[in-house]
Amino acid sequence: MVIYLVKYRRREGQTAHYSHGNNFLEVVRTTIPGLIFLGLAIYSNWVWAELHSDPALDALQINVLAFQFGSDFRYPGADEKLSAIDVGKISNEEQIWS
Image (cartoon, rainbow, N blue to C red; front, side):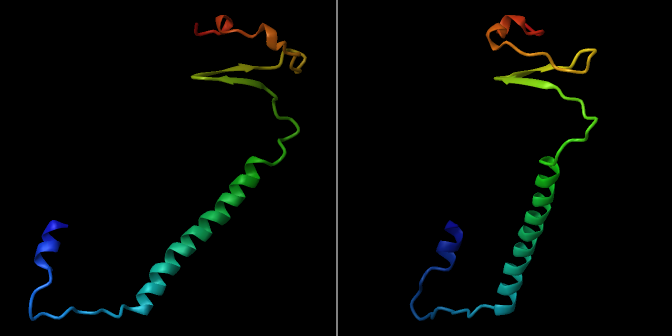
């Protein structure tokens, strides 16, 4: 930046060059990112709908307990049902990795 400031500084006897720009180039440079963002918006809307759709009827239900730097997963038993959880009994000492 300093090189350009020194090289193209104002000098006596030189007039400034004014560029009117290129309207076609400006339209192209605006249209292409606009189309990219529109495509990403349409695609992300489709992905969002897929993520928030109803699960399959035979999907396995699990219980996930998330906490800082870890998570705990509970799977259903032999009867394929999750038992009730008592939050008063949850402690860090009961975690597998401790």
